Image (cartoon, rainbow, N blue to C red):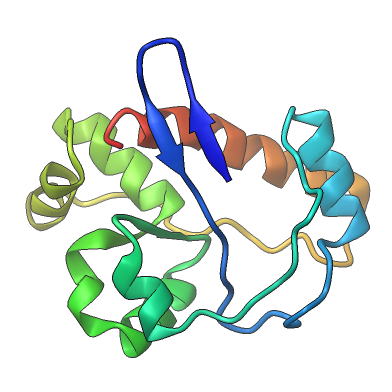
Length: 146
C-alpha cells in the first residue's frame, strides 16, 4: 500500500504475519474498523513473514514484543529496523528522532513504557475500535521518521 501527502511524503507499506492464516482475507470486524478509520482493506491477503520480506523493509513494526522477537529470529540483522509500534512511537517522541537510525540509537538511551498492542481477534467490536484507534494514534508519529 502506498501513501503520499502534499508535503512530499511517499511511503509504501505491506503486511506479513508471524503466525497468521496465510491466504485469508482480513477479519471482517478488523476490516470494518479499518474502513471506519479511513483505511482500506480491499485486496488484503495474509502472508507469512520471510527473511526476504524482512530484508527488503526499511522499517518493521510489530504489535507486540513477542512478534518483534519472532521477526528477529527470522531476520536478526534487522534489529536496528524492528520495533513494536508503541516502542517506535515512544522513542520518536522522547528522543525527537527524525530518522529510523535516530529511533534505533534512542533505544539504547531511553526506556519506554508499554510495548504491546493487544490482539482484538474474536473479541467485541468495542475492543477492535479501541485497538484500531490506538494504532491510528501512533502512526502519525512514526510517519515523521519515514
